Length: 289
Image (cartoon, rainbow, N blue to C red; front, side, top):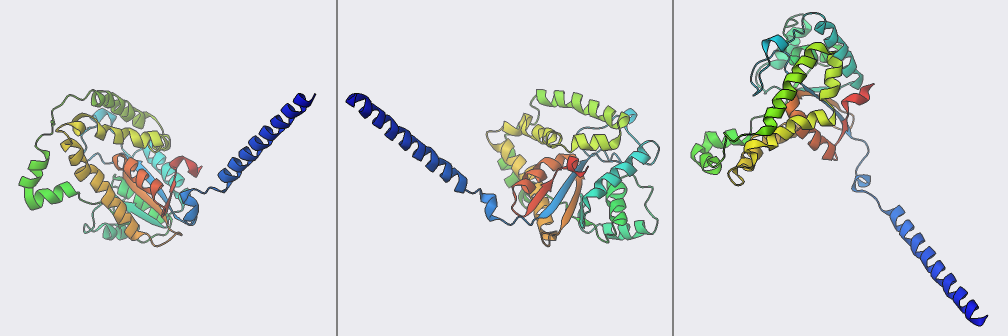
């Protein structure tokens, strides 16, 4: 009997100790804060709209087939652009940033647009940016595109740049690009045959953004030791970092709602910057319903 009482007392002590330990751990977990708890919840809102180029300038590596091109000035795509514009306007932007370099007179063109000119231009800077800015009574377009460090180095010392990149294998076979071309051909057909709003929802999902970005990380990227990675850093990643810096410089405070309209190849890196930054809240395109 005495032994049974001793055993019961020992079990009760162990149980109490475990309860105290569990309670202490729970209390410790409950008081831990995340880093974001220390930053202001009042942040500028940013909507990144990645797009294909409505006027098909042919500057990207992937070229659209003539049979797949659409005309945003003709039905049914003309009405679909209207639906897309009305959807994006739900964001209620206070600033619109476009894929254009400063010094090319885009705000002069915007002023002319509001007087009735340029409405037959097919580019997204006209059909989306200027149209949304006009409808929401904005008077400025922010040209935030940038050159990249690779271009700067080439202009200052092309020999130095060559010494940093000469080992890259630009001709390497890239099976992922072969698959990607199949996808791009499919996507072009969908742009032609699917409502543009649905196309943009697909393009501006996390997967839609990252799909394009991932293709910069295959093929030549890992050749030449680290030279392929260095080239990418100086070229594409750097260009988008500079674009992000330009957007920081037009941001005045937490009341800003910044609409960023750029080619979809830029969207994944810009998403990465905005999601990580304590200055901004990244708004998902699909959340505007």
